[in-house]
Length: 372
Image 1: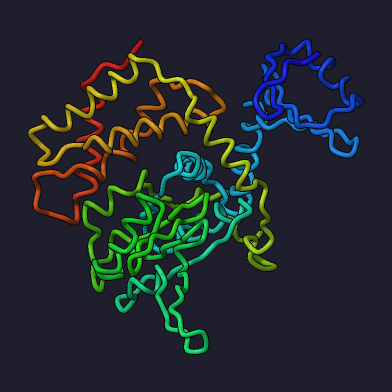
Image 2: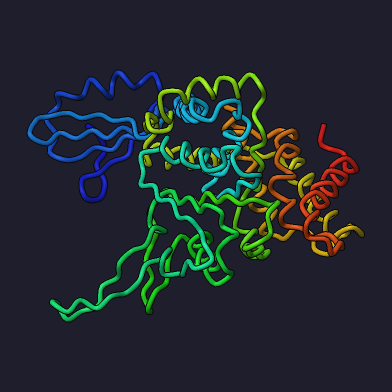
């Protein structure tokens, strides 16, 4: 007889070889729910009305790697020749963070954001940021209902799973700051009430760094909310030729369908947190961060939040690469995208600030020896 515990539940550790024994109990008449957990995952054995249901609730990492590959392939069907950018966007998604796509107009920033969001079965909203955009246009507003005599909160586009903030630097600081609480705490506070945002939640923002007329520079506090700042870049000639062919009969993005569910993402995120980071790699990351604070070229170094997000990013990137452990190359690959927008140089030339900070981060990386 199986040992019963409080309220009709019991837990029995089993080995992989015992899976057949568990399934053989399917016809046994039980009047309660049996939860059996072991090395094969968690199996829920329900025998209500004589029926048996066994479900694996923890997918193996191999299955989860397959889902990540599907996401990457799905995005690459539309955004041709940019698999490296797709991997970076997936890194932010699986880390539960946000991404800023910064480049010249017309290279596929918005397309990358839409392809990423449409690859997951969730709600997508696009907000075109303009100088007259108000915080309530993003968050929502409280409206008086004359028929009921009560106030009701009408939710804004921020309550979507994926929010594409297009040309984010065209909105004034007041509107930009409306995103701060949502991006960091996954909630919106309005009129004394707190509203939780859905899961998954991700902001994919775009901006043109070479145009300054009619724009508002993102403050450091806003930039710090983005896990990665990356450039899309021009496609290679062979891929650009393929783009011409695929757009003859319409927009390929319109044919893109979801290949993963929010539940899949939740399972992957749990697995990402279990990716192993050796102590030597952690110390390597700390050496780099402390070097940014001591650098004579920088006025502001990377913060504690910066290294925490960097730590999550390398875990996520390792998982995107189908590994359950982090290697030094992961740290090097993500150093500039994660840290460059979190430090400030002593130069007063804003136009060249990005190039300067990225160059400093690379020099620091070259000066510090990585783990063997």
